[in-house]
Image 1: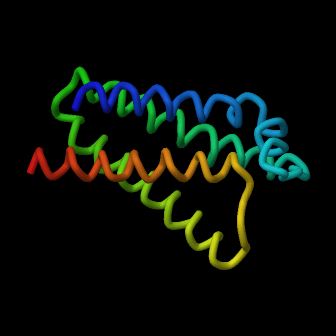
Image 2 (image 1 turned 60 degrees about the vertical axis):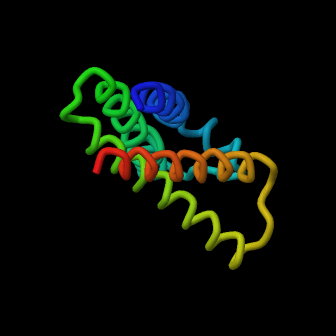
Image 3 (image 1 turned 135 degrees about the vertical axis):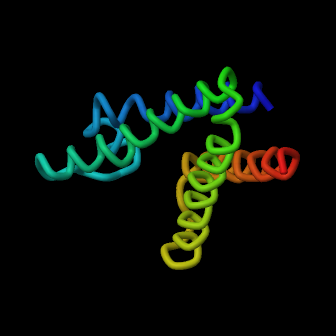
Length: 122
């Protein structure tokens, strides 16, 4: 479980770094053009800050057993929510690019693994 928390935490932190420090570049990769201070602030907060803190919690949980269950629940909520949103978008908006498909596969894998580790702890 510690390995899952560390690897997942590192991946989550890495995903959050670009939107935190370069919200325009991160958004343009996805085909989104940000239009002003509010858009950059929202991108830094939602795609960057939340992601960075979530990854840091996951990494810390590997060394602080009391944080393991909350970190696993957080990972399940994040990856489950991302998967739900992507599946809904697939139905309502159509087929995304390869980048989104790859992201969705990793999100589903993260969700399944987090649920597994939660069930082991219970």
